[in-house]
Image 1 (cartoon, one colour):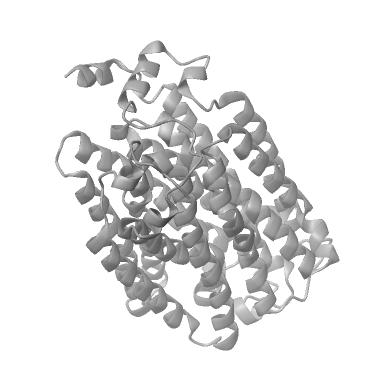
Image 2: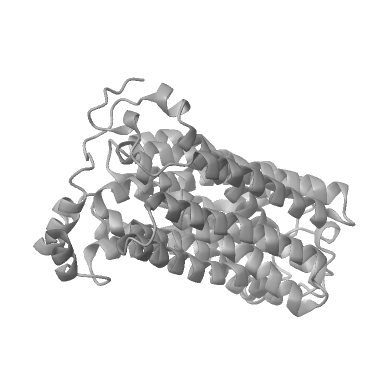
Length: 463
């Protein structure tokens, strides 16, 4: 009763903890815009995208002052996926060190380096595709630092009954980012040229980095603007979660934990599909709908606008079910994970076999991608349920498996498009459906929502 009474008096949306979630939302938005902008600019900066997109130069006007490159579909696929090569390298180290060192400094370094790499991309392209790949790998390392390092924040800032809301508000930036970049990139390409796209989004990243350093604090106890009521609410809610630095890890127990593997497999499947959609949406839309670059950007961005809305609503619904004791924690996690993995399969099949006109294609395209983000209120929070003490490290591990899925999907997508330009989308979407289905079955069987024995504070932890 005392905690319920306190939670009613504590500040709600206009509070420091929601402010931390919001600034992290903008960090994620910037990181994703810097990664995604190349997917659409590739349509106008490469001379032979016709083999992928069947788009004529008249449909995609470009600035005559901007250079054009002769990169084959294979090279384009490697360039688009190279970001993941860098990101996967840093997931586990950053996940571990975020539990020891200042998350504020870790994320600031990642933001700044990613922004600098974005600003340098046009220059790298002039030198050659190899340097672009190197630049994208370094950028991926920086972005992976931000994505992996941020998870540790919620062990200090997110009360258990608000984890869904706070984490989905911050994560929704990764959905709003693609919508914004795909919406405006076409206009920037036509008005200013594709080079300006990288300068604009790189500069935005530098601004957000400065704002992050000013606003964010690692611990609620150190924030100069937080009220005593909110500070006490957060600390009392998290009293049972150890906030001490993690210096040793029960690696053997983690490797033997089926709940951890269940989360990892789901992350692999989810990011496999998500990265393919981000990377190849413009190409799919040009191939199927034959639109110009501005219309392409708008249509490619629509799924992410709806994903942004669904992500926020999913977090609200999950926390509502938990706070009202409608479902148990494990039921909530499994229900939202199931919705986030089954709905995309259903709508992807509809996209392939029931899309008879422009409108039906757009509707199924939006639903097949946007509904996947219901899983953010399920499997993505699940690590915080089973091992809050090692949340940063395990999120790094499970995110690494997702990054592997994303890297492989980008590369395989390019290879399939190059090998089978006539009917590649059937193979790709059916592959996504099969991977999602297998991962979901494993998750439903082995997922847990209680703190595991090896993750309890009393457990002696060794490498």
